[in-house]
Length: 78
Image (cartoon, rainbow, N blue to C red; front, top):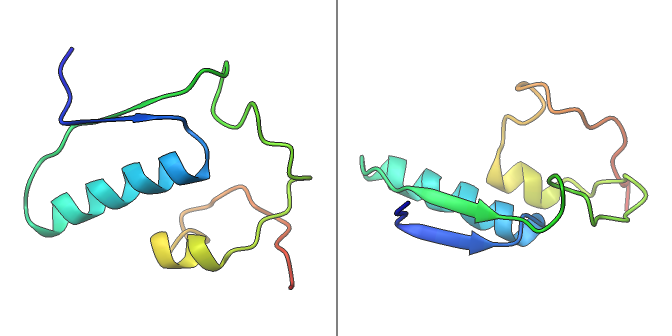
């Protein structure tokens, strides 16, 4: 298998990097293959955050995340 970019870790930083790379490539009408490797059995397997999300970074990265039906019901107020 060959990829243009391989990101190790599917945590917030790794996933954000993968999303942003794909966004930047799309803006320039380019195709970039990105592979994200995660040691856990599934994405989020190692997150122990209490399932509360502070949405500022998500709003910047994916402005329409609510309209897309993201399964987030609780956000941090401060």
